[in-house]
Length: 199
Image (cartoon, rainbow, N blue to C red; front, side, top):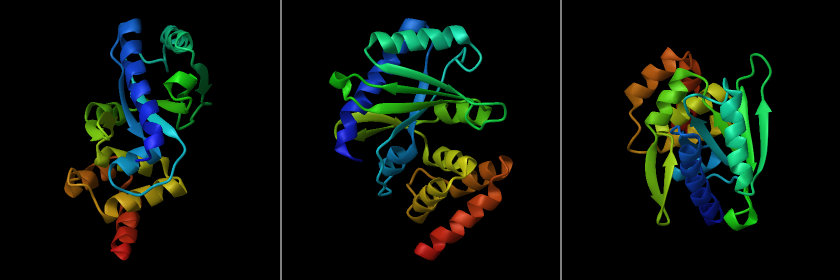
């Protein structure tokens, strides 16, 4: 993982904790995107910080929580932008925050979980150590499912990379069962075939 991101990751973890206390509800969150793939050992260049988060009530359905979160991050000198998807959008709500310079100065996209399996994935997230910092990352099986569901070209490349040299935490039987339950089985099979060709 690129060390330039570590101060910002640490800052965001602290901000989430402080936000939970401020709005009086626990925020579950985990790293997703390119950095999460790199955290599981796949070489991946990225310039983005991407998280998935969830809380109850969710800002997807509660404008009060959305306003409270926005106010909190603005008080920390972060720039805040809510992006609300249109009807049927696979990403119904995304929060983009730009950290203050003293917190790392990078921006982060926070996707709010809107499906039960995504919320369950957050409860299974794993804390790993990166350069003496603790980082919460989606379990590799859940990360693969999230990327299969997104289905973009880079997402499928990431899945193939994770399957080519799978982390020890990955259980293939459980992954296959989950993928078929979510109707992602065919896409998983294609990535498995691509991974087999690379071995």
